[in-house]
Image (tube, rainbow, N blue to C red; front, side, top):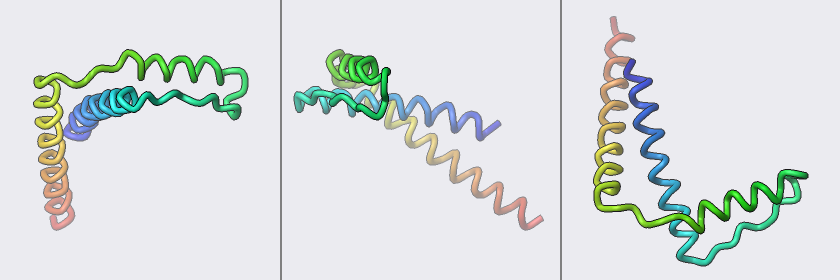
Length: 91
């Protein structure tokens, strides 16, 4: 149960991180290169990734606060889970 909760919160947190990365790339004027290793999907992947960058925006104050809260919660859950694991190994 705790593991699922941690994974869900971590996934939400990671979503915020990706949004920040896309926005940072936008501020740099980054253009996604064509990756020939992707074969026939190369153009589509390039276009989709560039669209994520072009449509990105800075996180709002509310999103930044939620991101920080999520980070704290996930760290707390991991510490609690570690304690439970250590205790259960003793008994």
